[in-house]
Image 1 (cartoon, rainbow, N blue to C red):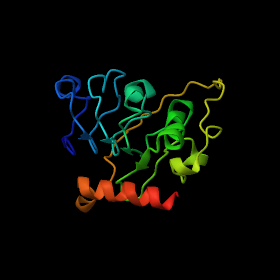
Image 2 (cartoon, rainbow, N blue to C red; image 1 turned 90 degrees about the horizontal axis):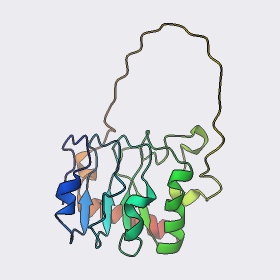
Image 3 (cartoon, rainbow, N blue to C red; image 1 turned 180 degrees about the vertical axis):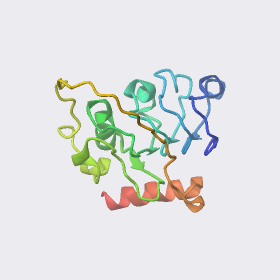
Image 4 (tube, one colour; image 1 turned 30 degrees about the horizontal axis):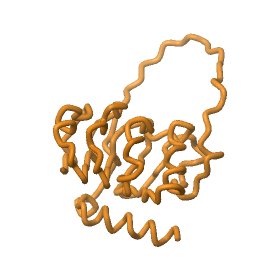
Length: 178
């Protein structure tokens, strides 16, 4: 099922729940910020999931936990993604379940934060890299400023959107990492 580039702002929970035999789901390049923990509760056969190009800070392991025997490909990444302890499950799944992780973005950036991980992909990261440090507290002086924030959709090209290309990228990542 491809819901690529549909400007979705929320995960289509009820629609996905009604498709328990779904094998491929492409939600790439939408405006989905949060993935519900119950997102794939009914999808026991999902093998390929594309979430790249969405402004998600993290993907909760609870949302995909029961897919560890079926999920083989994950397309993920972007400037909004924070690679910390909430994402450490991905490195475990790469090692333990042969999960292939890729991204279809023009200049794939798997981690948007923290800054020192921006140029690295999940195959280059270890559990020790994906940590949640202590909460830093700072004292700030109150000032009044006006800021304008513009959210941009990650750039991509139409030739990188097909499922065939996604599968090819996953296979190339696997070959490169073996």
